[in-house]
Length: 76
Image 1 (cartoon, rainbow, N blue to C red):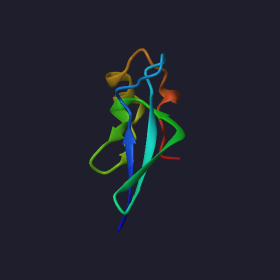
Image 2: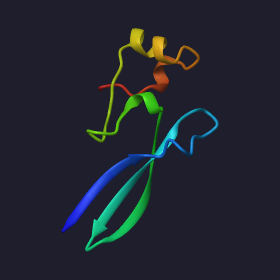
Image 3: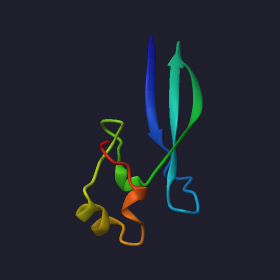
Image 4: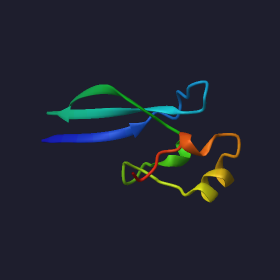
């Protein structure tokens, strides 16, 4: 059986507050970890759905006022 999971490595944040996303690929009980080039703020990650959460400008300013709105992922 094969499984693929995406995990936000919140325990390893970068200096700007973002954390990298790892891809975990498992085949026959053997796991392989791959680091993606995607970096997100922990508030922008839904761990249950393994997807990015998109905020509008008002919500983004409320969650992280010190971060510019353009740093958050957008739906487009």
